[in-house]
Length: 221
Image 1 (cartoon, rainbow, N blue to C red):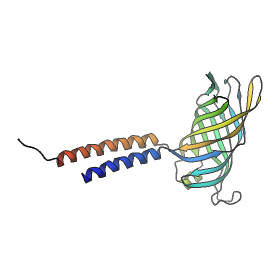
Image 2 (image 1 turned 180 degrees about the vertical axis):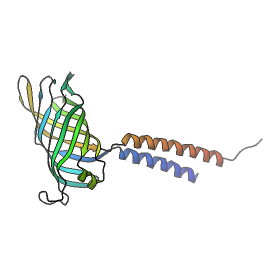
Image 3 (image 1 turned 30 degrees about the vertical axis):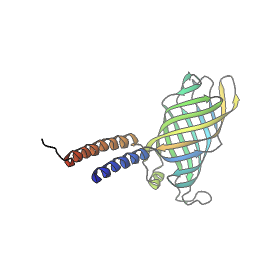
Image 4 (image 1 turned 90 degrees about the vertical axis):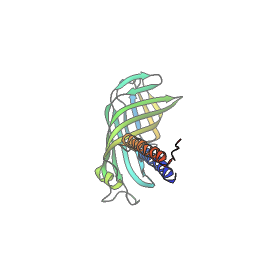
């Protein structure tokens, strides 16, 4: 039975590790700076610029970041309830630098220039009882020097959330101010990791059942 207990614990730890791997691996909190423009009826592109990113969080590490994000979605697909929908396409770019040693300003050797580029998979502008929020998914390409420094893949998937406040509305267009949000880069093989852990768990469980049957005394009549 001691062997069985060890196998059960192994199954649990492997699956929990896979779920952790499937989570966010790089977080970039978004500051309260920048503007977002879009059409009233959601048939034009949604554009954002001057959006501030001050930190990069990876595990227990927090790196000071001097960067600005801009983006343009694909053309809007119209309105669904209180949401404006945008399809696949358009682009997102973050420019600036990452301070490796928490110094004042960026220095030679710090990852800089284009920190990240991405392509939207989809985007949705949601009006939740007066609170505007832009939610989007994208595929990104990280700066190779930054990816090497963090030990993460250059290419992966990500999600973005922006909280917005209306500044000006005209007949055809709306201008909103960015109040904050977050950008999260996810581990690309998350689904593969979870599937692999499940298959391995089934394999180990099958082995446990064989051990139990082998160790159970046979009763003969």
